[in-house]
Structure formats: C-alpha cells, structure tokens
Length: 546
Image 1 (cartoon, rainbow, N blue to C red):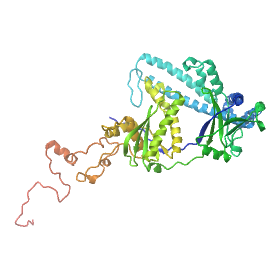
Image 2: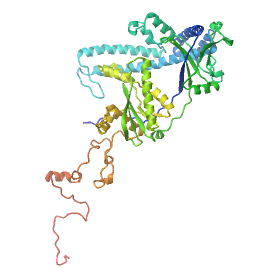
Image 3: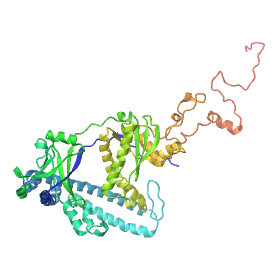
C-alpha cells in the first residue's frame, strides 16, 4: 500500500494591517430645499458617470492617458474639473473591478471544464478517489453532463474572446438590482419602489480628497464644526446659497467614531474623501468620510508568538476558538461565538461584526498578542462540477465568510492592538480531530471537531507540529526521560503509541521468541570480557609448551 502524499504546507505569516478608514454619520434636519438640491446634483452627476463609463468600456484595451484626458475635459464643461476627476477615477475603478471579476469567471469555467472532461473520460459507475473523482452513475447523467460540457465550453470561449478584446459587462446600479425588476413579487417590491431604488443607486455624489486644499476636500467640504457644503456643477450653480457657487446644508456633522482622528486630518488639510448617499428604505441621507492610512510595518512573527495565541476555526455559523500558550499547550476550555447568515446583507454584516468583537474582547482578556486564522479561499470549491450532487455542502461552504471576514478581522483587531496570523488550512480539521478531540474531552468539557481544529490552527501559527506528543518515559525505564517520539520520524506509523516491551527490543528477540516463548534469556553480550563460552574452565597442573 503506497503512502499518502501530503501537499506542501505554506509557512504562517502576519497579515498586513488596514490600509484605509471609513466613518459615517447621518445628515439630520435637512430642509426641503436641501433634499431637492442633493437629488438634482446626484441625478446630474449620475448621468455624466453613465456616459463616462460607456466611453471607457468603448475604449477597451486602447485606453491611454490621452483618452482619459479627453474624457475628463468633456466632463469638466458640464460639471467642474474636480467633479470630472472624481467621476473618471470611479469609472476606472469600476472597469478594473469588472476585469478582475472576468478573470475569476474564466478560471471558474476552466476548472469546471477540466472536471467534466475527466469524469466523462471515466467508465460509467467508476468509483473515485480522494484525489480524483470517478465516472458518472448512469448513462443518462453522462449524457446530460456532455451537454453541460458544451455549454461551459461555449461560455469559456466567449469570455476569453471578451477578455482579449477588452470587453467587460458592467451595470451601473448593480446587476442584482437590475434582475430584481423581473422578480418584484419575490422581492416584495412594487414597480415604483424598485424604480426609486434603481435611480438612487445610479446617482453620483462622491468626491476624492486632495492634500493641501482647505480641509482636505474642495468639492465636498466639511469644516471642523460640522458644516457641510457642496460645490455645485455649472448647470446647477443658480441653486447656490453662498459665494463661489457653493451650497451649504442645514445639517451639522458630528462623527462619534474616530472623530478626533478626522478632526486632526482636516485641520492639517490632509486628503479626506466624502460620499453622500440616500437610504431609500429609511428615507435618510448619510455622509461617509474615508481616508488612506500609511503602510504600517507588522510586528515580527516571533513577537506575535511570545504571549501565546488564540486559534480560531471559521465555520458556517460560529467561530470555534481555543487559547494556547507559547509552547502550544491548550489553556482552559473551548469558546464558541455564534452568528447567523440567513438574513439580509446588513444583518449578516452586523452578525459578523458582533462575533468578531466578542473574539477580540476575549483575546484581550487572555493577554495574547495575536489571533491565528486560516487563509481560506473557496473560489475553486463552489462549482457544481467539483461536488456534483452535494448541493447542501456547496451551500455550506458558500455561506462561510472568507474574504470579507479576513479583511474585517484585520481592521478591527488593529484597533485593539492585536495582530492576525494567517496559516495554511491544510489538514487542520482532520489532524486536530485525530490528535486533540478525544484527549481533551471530559465529562464537563464537550470537544467538537471544530474546537480541535482551533488548537491545530493555533499550534501551526506558533510553529509547532499539530501532532500531540506523548509523555516521556521515567528515568528507570529508558533514555533518561527523553521524549519517546524523538526516536521516530513524523511519518512513521505508531510513533504516538505505547513503548514496546523491552524483550521485543533486544537484538535477538525474534530468534528467541521463535524457540522459547514466555521465558527471557539474558541477551548475548558483544564485548570480549562479557562473552559467554560453551566450555568449562579446568586448571592444568603443567604448563603446555609444545
């Protein structure tokens, strides 16, 4: 039987800290004129953004700085130079995001085509292995999968052609909201409600900051006392209520979170970007301020390991966390932090933030300096072709928050002075359950597979092997109380078992066990002085000389 080949395991690393900050506050006590001006500006700039996105998509791979400058010049006449700069930058960001999503879609199609071709090449009913799937169950399923293969190949060819020609498919306002128009009854919306959401999502009321300018932003300016003013586009300049074509809102802003940091930035005239948006469901206006942080050098990995680690296993409905000291020994009992992912996007986001906050507070009480998580990526695991009939399993891994969770955990942990150590997720659940679930189970301590995986993640982040070492033998037994596992390599079977009897470790144990069972003779010595002789000793009276 051939030994199973394990894939290489990447070394753990300290995740980079957050690169930006965003805070939000509500625009309260707006007058009717304020609401009217905000709607007019958002609609006008939204139309310009639509035209600019269309022009950028038409340029495709032929885009250059000259075409960018020409587009910006054309928008300046209908708005202003700063509004034109914000619109063109947002357009480029949206086009670049569409290109990245297009590449991910192509890779997903390629993975599906490879899996289908492999399974179709196998005989019907052929069983698969852990490394490669087998054939399909019946001829009918085999036939339907051939049609599925042709469909995916057609989609793949079309996606590759679009990418080569620089063609992307984007919808300003969101494709999901666009498709909701055809399922209003399921979304519990009327046509008028959907229309209001659709128009609001296509507005544009965002302005990038500029260092050196007054309060860090000349287009949407917010003073330290909370006064908000907007530079109106040229066609709407007649609505201005102050000098230089600006409109001052009646609402005052007061950021409760990071307010001091925001005040320091605008007082020093450092860049701050602002975005004004309307929540249609609540009928409320909000203002979001954001700025970039300088690249912060992360702490060394050894420093993060000095005070131990919290190992966190991410699941579809909870975090399973366990505290470990710097030697890799579990401390205390397992902790589980539950969350729900079945509601709206805002509800799911709030649940994740609440669970992460609980983990961070517990980590601070434990006194550790870092939290270990798995560097998960289920992009290639969600395809129908990989798991076939396992629809519930595909839904399970689709619910696990991976990318958003890691980014949010890093940003929230940085505020608590904690670091995040990302580890390779290979075999953590399997080896954790094998070596830690049963030994730590007790009548008053229920250990799950996920709790044991948290220990495995923490030990890998600390640089220790996941496998649990047994206690050393006593001095009078062997080896001066050295670890028995050091006598065997990690891939040797049975190295975690009990030490064999002394009789079976003698150099002639096999020969003696075949002849005399149940008795133990003294082992023959290899030295000259202790060698046994078969004869008897007799003293001769005379010296033999010849």
